[in-house]
Image 1: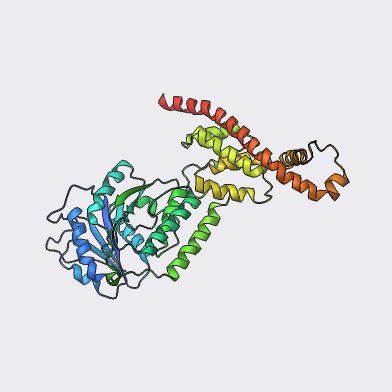
Image 2: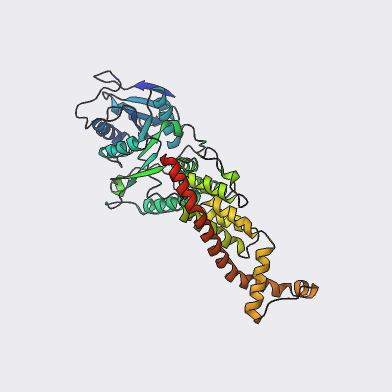
Length: 409
C-alpha cells in the first residue's frame, strides 16, 4: 500500500481551497474509494473540495492511472497495489483517517453518482448523534435508474429488517458517514460490495443508531455507465452473507458488542427484574406486551422445535423485543398448554370434554389427539397471548413510571 499527497500549489494538507462552502467540523474526512474511474474522478474530487477541505482518495489497485488526473489538488491519496475490494478501500481510508486525528469519515463514490453538495446534510446528523452511522438514501425519482438498483435496494432493505429489526430506505447506498471508533471495532469480514451490508447489520447488533438523510443521485445513460459490480460474483457474496447473518440473528443469545448484555438475565421466572432491564433499554410497555403475547402465541401453536426460530425471525422483521418473546415462550413448555389445546380441540369437535386418559385415548387414538391439539390451539394460542400480553403491559406501566421518576431526580 502506498501513501502520498497529490502535488498541490498550497502544499498543505487541510488547506481550504477557494470556494469551500460552510464550515465543517475538523474531525470529518471525505473518503473516496476508486477503481478505474479516471474519467469521472477529478470532477468528483474537485466538487468534494468545494464543500470540504479534507479529502482522501483510496485507489484500490486501478489500472487506468487514475491518480494522475488529480495532480495539483490538495488531497491525500492512498493506493493498494492490487484490487482488494471497496470494503477494503474504505477500511484503509478509515485507518489512515484515525492516524491523522479524524473522528468520522464520509464515503462517496468516484463515479459521479453522488452529489458532494449533499455532504452538508451529514454534518448536522453527526453533530446531533456522533455515534450513529448515517446513510444517504438516494432519491430514485430521477432518470436512468437501473432496474437492478431498484430491486437490489428493496432486497437488501428487506434482509436488514429481518436481521436487525431496523428499517432503512437504502441499505446499498455508498454515501455514508461512519464514526471511526465504531467502524474499526466491528468484527467485519467482507471486503467487497457486501461490506456495506455487513457493516450496517453488525452495527445495529452492537446497539448503534442507523440514521438516514435523503440525497440526490445521478445515473448517466446506460451506454455511458461504468460499474464494477459483478452481477454473478457479488450477488453470490451478498446472498451468502445474508444467509450467515440471518442464521446468526436467529440464534437465541445476544450478539457481541451489544450496549446492554443483560439479555441472559431476562426470564419469565424473574418478571419484574426482566421488565426493569428491558424498559431501561427504552422499550415501551406496549411493545413488551405485544412481544410477550407474540411469544406465547407461537409457543402454543403445534410447531414443535420451530417456535424459537419463528420468534427470532419474526421479531427482527416486526421490531418486537425478541428477549421478551423468548421469555414468555417458556410458559408454553409442555405439557400444560398442549394439554389444554387437546382438551379444547376435543370439546370443539364433540361438544364435551375429554375425561378419559388411557392407552386407548392417548395411544391408539393419537391421530385424533393430534387433530384436537391443532384445532384447540387456534383458541388457546390467541387467548393465552392476549392474557399474557395484557398482564405484561399492566406490569410494565408502573415499572416504567418508577424508572422515569428516578431518572428525573
